[in-house]
Image 1 (cartoon, rainbow, N blue to C red):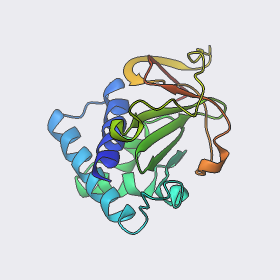
Image 2 (image 1 turned 90 degrees about the vertical axis):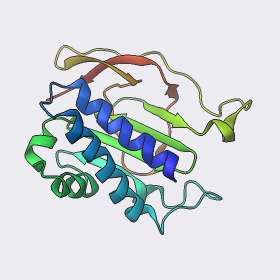
Image 3 (image 1 turned 120 degrees about the vertical axis):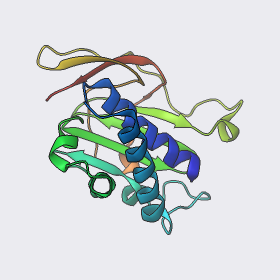
Image 4 (image 1 turned 60 degrees about the horizontal axis):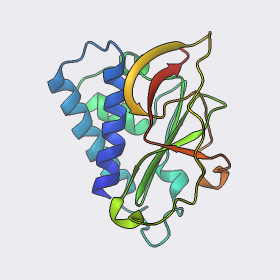
Length: 179
């Protein structure tokens, strides 16, 4: 669980760094640590390595105009306001933090991307997912260059059973989301 949470929190920090955020590196490190602590508590009784999709909806981190309560709690603990942090994220973000994998989707109609997979679990195994073409830019969205893999416009409810689109693995692209 610690690797998945560490990667999920690092993904969120990369999203913030991609924007002109005004936070110090110390604040970002504190926020990352706070998010990790909150997620550890949140997932403690909802982590099933033998059945990774079980509890996936509960472990989902969701931003849909409002920040996920776990992010709000972590930010409050270190004195970062909800409104300030809300401006640093896309309007729509769904992230699944599951045993051996962290995946995400941004916006309302994009693809799902795997941010991190446990290399010990999948070493030498073919992917069960297909690759997709890189995301497209839209004239109504702002572009932010980033090293966050596979950012695209898209969205999905917090439910792994809706994994109905192919996944892009670790392809650096531009941030494209409405704000």
